[in-house]
Length: 444
Image (tube, rainbow, N blue to C red; front, side):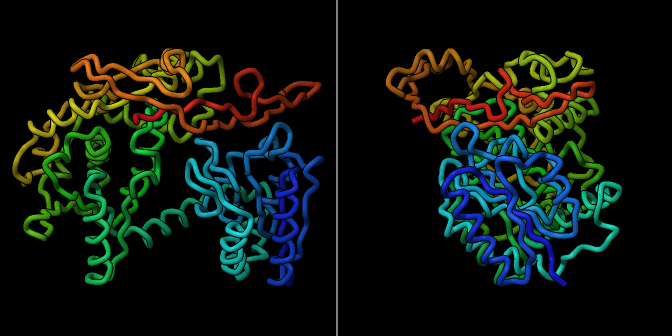
């Protein structure tokens, strides 16, 4: 039986060329292909195709004004395994598809040929699962389809990352060798995030951006069979590694997987004691949950004015980090000189108990504060940069840190239809934007 394949192209020449090539690819694999008219496609059209019996290919390339597809885009694409999102440009920060690989990492680009190579594999994989059974079609079965997508996503994590390794970026090559030896030796998959995979290591990021990255890391840790901590003298000097430990302690009651510490000098792992008995307090766990919730649902930041992070103003803890534009506009960076001093104060020996690792102030992690972390307003930094280059001064050691402007990041704000007549469609972003461009600054 022919399986439907619906393609949503962009309006540019490259978008139309990609759609035509995907159509030929789909027809060779036994799909009945439909190319949606980019001038007339709507959100209901996309939703209907996603909830139908077949496969959807959605071109999410960021093109010029009125050339891209984001007026049609839906957050729901993140939960539907039969929707393949592709893009020649890096995606908006808050627009994550169900499956990676069809788009480049920031700030790179893909060609149509590279996208087609990826799509060829995915269409072959999905062909055996479509047409979908009736109980996975239609609006009445949408929740069941989403549940299936979530479970398959967790299963994919388990297949690709039975062991998750947490480490400092300066040891990436050593960790890569360890991962390869482990894969061959114990026949288990190993996952770690390489430098720049989630964000450039020198990017000045807001609290919102940082917790968005931690949301991804937390999902992989939660779905792993084992968490390995690659111990080094500077392991606790990074906010990122302290945040991973804080998330781990925050879900201690749900922890089913063992936590092992890898001692690179001994060349062996040993199990850390006390993980399940660790407790950072219910209030801190609630605050972490809220940050992860907002990281997962950044649309919250656009439901009212830009100075409010959550509907109705204050959250239940009255946390200023979540109720002002500072959550998205204050950029946080680490001074290399101050970080080096923190490394020198680090415990010299590998810890034996989980509580030995939790020797830092958990509240500083939650609020992204601490002696080696600095904050600067995004707008203030923009005003201080001349010819795309400038500097920031560390308030602790007075070091002048060079800063330059990188390619912008984009944020997606979906089109919504008013709930009362005349049912006008409008974009929900600042100034009625669908895509908001935010400047990106790098320490250099």
